[in-house]
Image (tube, rainbow, N blue to C red; front, side):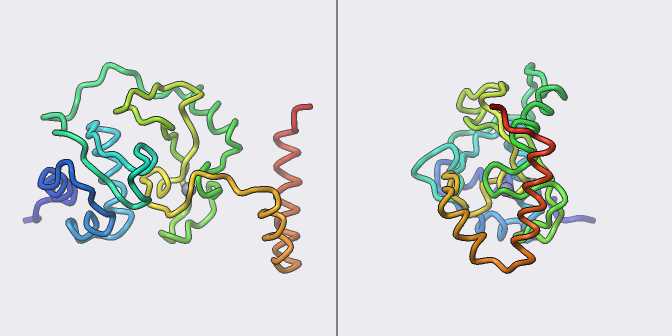
Length: 194
Ligand SMILES: [Zn+2]
């Protein structure tokens, strides 16, 4: 027989801590599983069951890796009448974001250094649905699995040109060449609008 599943354990943990700030380490410890497991369970609770679990994307006083179950969750998996994001809208978001995680800059096929797994992109809400955010192009962005959970310690600020150039100049010739090749391909595929 299996012990209570990881999702049940994470549910109980959040219920025991309603209204309190909890950290990713506490969540992970509550289920005793690896990083990707707790992140996936958390995503399911937020997205599939509409639990109002907020992250630093939603509330300025939370740090990356901090979460709060804002209020009592829905009794059972919420019946939702909103349609899932259409394939067309999904494609539009991915295209506009250049198939790149808008937080950490990783692309599908890259290995996420935090999890050691291949990056998969999700469509995330800029303003969370639980806070009234809509399924509209302007409120959607491409995020990798880890960033979608608010589990990566990266600010929302985009790197500046000066910072980017300084990093490229610090890198070795081979790395610089790889950046050049990637940019050449990118701007061939997504020509800059005049
Ligand atoms: Zn990311």
